[in-house]
Image (tube, rainbow, N blue to C red):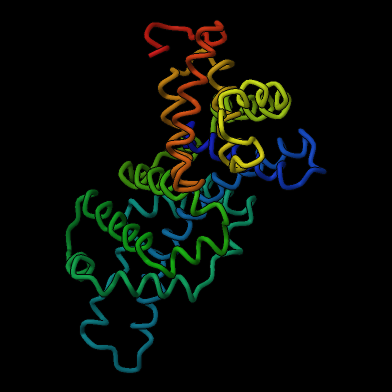
Length: 311
């Protein structure tokens, strides 16, 4: 589920926390990094759970209509198809998924008042009204309705506040979680172990992210010695903290990860600087890394494996 960009951002955040708290040692930061990875997976699971609970609220809605002293014909004809269709049932009745919800204590964070409000937003739409009146369905009908529900949720300010209140990493991880949930919905009805596909892998998390984090911490002095001469008229103390962290990460990646093309490294760190640093950082990072790449290549310190990886 996590791309290398997501991993780079998490490594950057760990290095920033270390720069702000001098009592932290390598193993403290590694533990925090691993926890941040778990939080990303929890966020994916929690987002799925919120979708399931919102769909299941149709059962509550049906019970309320049936409990009226004088239910209308419309009340009597109401069916909780949103909660009872095969697509959503493949999620809500998945034993392994429910076990994850329990073990990670995600169910305790789900508030009924929030779920009711999210459900009410859906039932106002013409698409839902048409869907609820249908008597025959194809699997795709249920999938399209769940995708619509999810779209309404992620565009709802209250829902975003709800997720951010429970997960501080929602802002950073939103795009990857949204992508993973959409992929899950489009593949419904779900296989029993579908959620394992989205669990962060050791190759990305450990072989790349954890190794990058360790190396930048352990080689901090050497990395600074490589970077400082390229700053020219810039005093190293005046360089933004995030910019220096990104430069150190980029140099480490250029010299220690032979399977990652140099252009990918350059482009990725420039893009991250746009999101997390100052307005001028993009040009600054781009210029310094361009100089550093030339110097490192001339010194034979950039060795890439595979055809075309230097380009």
